[in-house]
Image (cartoon, rainbow, N blue to C red):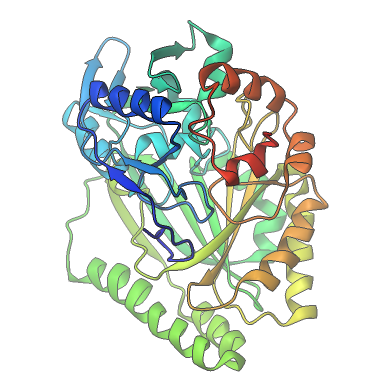
Amino acid sequence: MKNWSGLEKWNPSEILFPESEEAIQKIVKSAVDKKQKIRIIGSGHSFTKLCVTNDILISLDKYQGLVQVDKLTNQATVKGGTKLKKLGEILHAEGLAMENLGDIDAQSIAGTISTGTHGTGADFGTISTQVRAIRFVNGLGEIVECSTENNVELFKAAQVSLGGLGIITQVTLQCLPSYKLKMVYKKSSLTEVLKNYKSINQATRNFELYWMPYTDAVLTKKANVTNEEVDKIGIGSFFQEYILENLGFKIFCELAHYFPSKNRWVSEVSAKTLSTVVKRAYSHNIYATVRAVRFNEMEYNIPVEAYEEVMKEIQSSFEENEFKVHFPIENRFVKGDDIYLSPAFGRDSAYIACHVYSKKKHEAYFQKMEDIFKAHEGRPHWGKLHTRNANELLELYPKMPYFLKHRDEQDPNQIFISPYLKSLLGIL
């Protein structure tokens, strides 16, 4: 097995594809009896060792689909293995849509919420904040249910759980009536954005930007609800998204890989090619972007008040260190929440993501960036690369002891605990 970027490779003793909740229970009870360990994999989009195991690996790829819809409350319950792309289509067919999503739709809904995955928009929390109820099979093979109304403390632990409480079989989502978005991609300057990001966030439903290293150029993405007709997929949009943004970028990545001195040049050329593009579509077809170029990623959550200073320090670090990097640095904004292990716990946040082409070394660059994030109370995205240990994470997450209490109750035999999770959570 390997993850999406190819960084992590491992050999589980078994890979199982249960097709029902009863089958999942049976696997868990058998593992308890045989003293085996279990980890769960969605689409392998975590860059860390979250899915790595030498024992049983469970995929929910054959456990997808709609369970029920409540049109009065606009809530939908889906199976845990449902991939986000399929989820968007299912909801749209019911006249519903997710309130917000990230820019990749390959993940399962269970994996998405378990790692604290997010989109962007100052008025929107992580995707886990859209969840109203969770049903899972715990480490004893029992069916457990929790929600905003029942077992509330357990629910706060389950909303972002790292797969440590059990196997999520159902997720109930608070949806919106189906809506369309107009997304505008436009070239701007980082200097301008740092002056105005607060007002831009106030005026824009979903705002994010990509800074081109060694330049002052950024690509901004602004999305707002629209009543305009959706675009027809034509040769122009295909050329922009698949040829320029993926095939063309892949060629640049290969060039910079074999000729490291060209990284700055590649970034500068990429900055010059930025242009204005407008897309209109139903929301589930707007959020996600095609990612054909494989990379490794580190992403940190910082208090939004520190955003401007952090980005200035990152700019300075690039000039001082001349990193052999050309990937844009992604900036997004998320509303604070009260979920125990959410990186946005207790604070409105900015997320800053650094990427390195999968064929290149990333360690030295990521370490320099992480040093900056750490100096500003940074919390790592659970699915992205970082070097934080359990003691550091305990300081960053004041509710972690509460999470660990529920974790021990739901999985007393630690069948869902891997060496990597032990290192993260300080479990003996």
